[in-house]
Amino acid sequence: MPEPKLNTPTFNTPPLLSTFSLTNILSTKKLDSQFEKVVPKLKKMYDNAGFTDATFEAMMESVGWQGSLPWCAWYVKVVFMQLYSFDREWLSKHIGGGAVNNLYNVQSRNAIGDKRYIAITKNEQPRVGDVFCMGVSGNGHTGIVVEVYGKSGNGWKVKTIEGNTSDAGVREGYRTRYLTRTLQVGVAGVGSTQVLKGYWRRNFTEQELAKIQYDEAQGTYVMQKGTLQTPLGEVPVF
Image 1 (cartoon, rainbow, N blue to C red):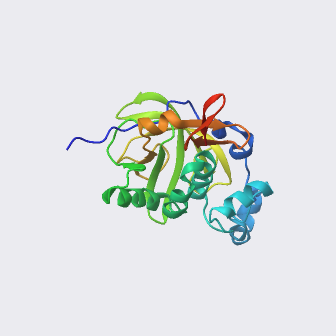
Image 2 (cartoon, one colour):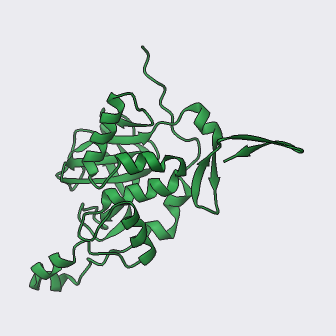
Image 3 (cartoon, one colour):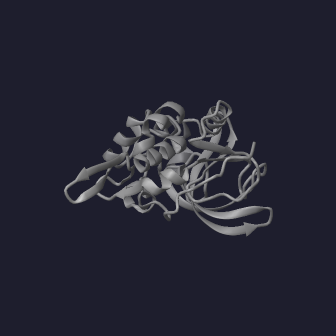
């Protein structure tokens, strides 16, 4: 049986990934560097304690994040829940706060025939919208590929958007950040000890792609459910 055709949206980087509200959120855990050296235990009390933007914090809590939890994977879930309104039930059930566990969850769904999202564990070129997963369960990191620059050695140089990171691209940081990484499955990234396990991505069918439309008012993509006959002809129903 031939492998199913893998599709990604024909639209460019989703507008949501470029908005200020989700790319410049600072958590409350950034403290003065000298203060960190003097009172490391007190700093730990503030780790992942919350966010400076109350709206963003409410969004994070709505998908399952709670104060003190690492939040890179919850950030990815927030983005996808907002981005694809038609997938919210699926994402609610199968995507959580574990960076690497989410990849395993998608693999498990694929094993029983659910290919709405697919896991990629071979070293192949990532695509815009792919969610990379590195590390191990309980000690991983994740983010979203928003641009692919091209081949770099045996991997690919990409631009990502990530939560719970820093300007240096750490896995336990204090903000969201656009970063440039070289991703190669089975290899640790530059400046990291965490090995890239793979990606998961939305596996759009040609039929779905033909029905997707961006709703600017809601800041989300919607999918046409059918058509309605009117005196002026058929109109799409979303």
